[in-house]
Amino acid sequence: MGNKLYVIGMGPGSEKLVHPAARELIENCDVLIGGRRNLEPYAHLSKEMLVIGNNLDEIYNYIRGNIEKKRIAVLASGDPGLYGIMSSLKENLPQVEMEVVPGISSLQYFCSKLHICWNDIAITSVHGRQQSQLYDIIKANRKTAVFTGGVQSPDAICRKMAELGLNNAVVAVGENLSYENERITVGSPDEIGKKTFGNLSLMIIQHNGDITGAQSQREISTPSRWEYSTPGIPDHLFIRGDVPMTKEEIRSVSISKLRLKNDSIVYDIGAGTGSVSVECGLVCRYGQVFAIEKDGEGVGLIEKNAGKFGVRNITIVNGEAPAALKGLPKPDRIFIGGTGGHMEEILDWIHRECRDVRVVANTVTIESTCEIIEGLKKRGFGDIEIINLSVSRDREAGEKHIMTALNPVYIISAEKQV
Image 1: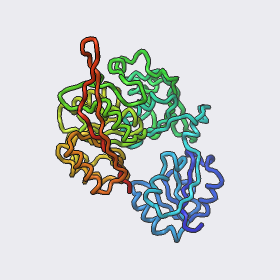
Image 2 (image 1 turned 60 degrees about the vertical axis):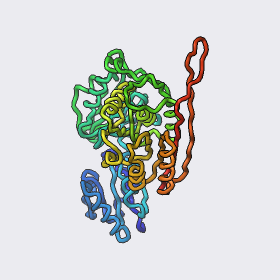
Image 3 (image 1 turned 180 degrees about the vertical axis):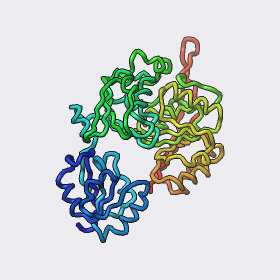
Image 4 (image 1 turned 135 degrees about the vertical axis):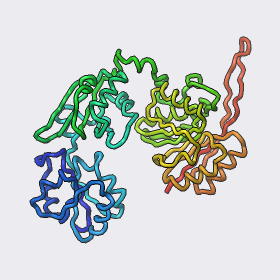
């Protein structure tokens, strides 16, 4: 077997669903690594066994030190590639050759029990983290599979769905799938919300696109005011104050230069009223937006605008960059709308802390523009692009219209790749 690490999918739980190729590899390996439940059926083989718990660093060190001497298999619940350990093994053991043996995932098994196709299902997880955008994902997809865990139980999720008015859905919950005590419960969000379920249950939520029912008074009172896929929310739709706001046309071009993905992690530095954060949050529905703003009024406006447009994946950070960035998940996209005079420190932080990241900055003065361009070049950023955008808007002059120019804005974009 050489020095391959075998990553073996053990299916949803029942031994009957472990296929023969996996069994053969398990019998021929010297060491089995996995959760206690996956290891127990093979105790009679008298293999060396390591139980995975809160000891992943020890597991990785063991594999590095023994892969050339012993035949090692990691037994993964379900399929290793579906919220499994495979990604962690690849990240932490890049020099170790792996062979992955797929297994039947609990999702695959659950869909077969419900007689539904899963080629068009959106898959997400709430294991070990808060996922505020979960309900936007549910609304956006007619079929959603949710791997639950901890306080994010099926009943808690359904109570929140009912509170938000997401009533016109059919929810199926699978517990202990493939075991003798398997339980499958189907009902409305309101019905599921009144029951209790075991840890690590799986949900499948289905609707016909009309998930917001007539009872959704909260949703009716704070509706999303932007139903389009393209950016460019009109300025007058935002709740305004004395805090600066990136204007509609500048915002649209700047967001296009960010080249967002639906799962991007975005920093909006100097977020102001939150107009850029809101637009990014609407695009990155599987991602997260961190709106960094030092001004108290701005923080309040960001919160109000996020609520107005129904964007739940924005985290507001009241502070000044770069100090306020400490401890946040690392971004792959950064928008710089304001620096408070800390441009050099912010660029230093990005250069030091970020790997693959795309940066877009707006500047108005020639001095600020030169500062960021030189700062990006000095730190080795590539693909630097500078545009100057001048926008004029019409206004009525009697029975005619004339154009009034807004301040021209520089939009600078660049990338750092490692």
